[in-house]
Image (cartoon, rainbow, N blue to C red; front, side, top):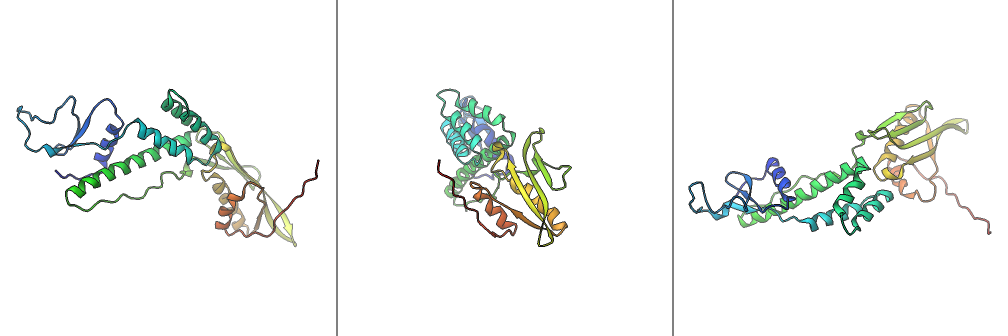
Length: 263
């Protein structure tokens, strides 16, 4: 029996997918989830056998192995080396893996928020895939899912503060913890004032989340307002940040090389 899959039903299916204490099916007529161990679907209220056995459809399969693989993939994709290492250590424990994983995330609220969004998105994709298999059996066209960028950091979760120095900004978490900062100074090139960015630093726990780019943007807002050219040196190991610089119309003007003295 066909049924429409809306957001309300998706959320209800999500709730029961991770519940390992029952055998759950969807009653397509009443549009509710039942535990077939407690409510056998073969009888109606009169005790008679139901004529339409297709009325009850098992929910998408999801067990602890699926949950573990999802945690493993999320940990592998973390750009912060610190968070990635701690999550990997939690996954390698012989006992209490799920609790250890949650404990790590609880220490990094932004990463925890990303995990919850990521997990919900992946499980919703499983539901859509399950629903499309059913639609194929019904002879109907598959439905699509709207693209969600759940892994991108919502920068509104951070507070960008301007310090007493006109060209210094800091990024703070909602809890007031320091997540990063940028510092710049004015200097002259051919009697023209320019801005030199001395440092953009992001705490290891928050790297790969877009904070450095947000701090850079704040500095460039002032530079644009004051019509200043902007210079920045990228230390070795920070080449990955060049992509953000190119997006802000930076152009390379020189490269530094060093030959260290032999000991």
